[in-house]
Image (tube, rainbow, N blue to C red; front, side, top):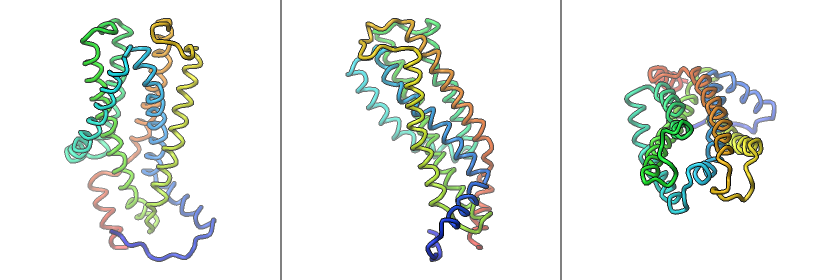
Length: 255
């Protein structure tokens, strides 16, 4: 691994200058802004997941436990899946492809229910369909996060070429900051949606007016789509290809 040179204690002005130097990197800013949009969408989806599972789909605790276990399987399967995507395609192309899949596949079940294309709640065919949809969607989401982390690591060399200084700490601290911020922002947006549709507190799924659940989809699905589309648009500004990264590594090695 690269051994950084010893440094004196930096002044606040030097720290601020180094941070600004990193922020001037277009590839870093593309990932930073995309992480805010995508993370907000993920937090928003996760916060509403329990409401959709119980109120909208009528799942019982035993079924929710199976969903949780399947999510763990999806996380394990995503590791070799992300590697294969990275080898077959460029990281950028693979990540953008994941975005398109999530945007198109994510709301399929909700739209299917709205247009009466799915079995009714309690039908033995519905739960396997939900499991298959949840598994494939989560598999691609986790694969994207793996690709995203690798893309962020490639920014280290790209930034070093411009600044003659490695800035792993600043780059990944910024990613951590975005992750913490968007988790709270996503939960806040979910709370706003629940307040707007006026979902009753402590209500049982059978007691909720079906129109409220339709309103939940009408408000949640477009907002989620806007966040994902925003992340997709910003991520397209990321320009580090496999060839460029190799060139960056060689350039940094000669510094």
